[in-house]
Length: 68
Image (spheres, rainbow, N blue to C red):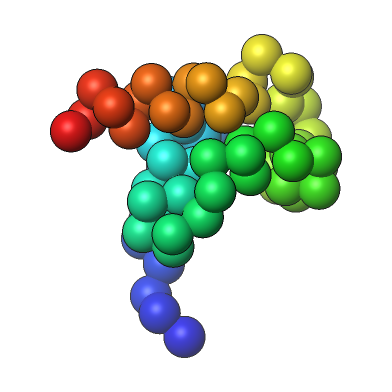
């Protein structure tokens, strides 16, 4: 197993960064951000998350574009 970095606090920005990193590093489709199963997984990890806390495909795309 790979060592997991020290967990960061839950915030919209941290989730956006983590999802963007997942998409880029694991060659995932941007559409994964809007996938119901993926979004439910994020909510399972943070049950108090709201719809606004979860990044959309557009959010991830914009974040990646702005980072590079």
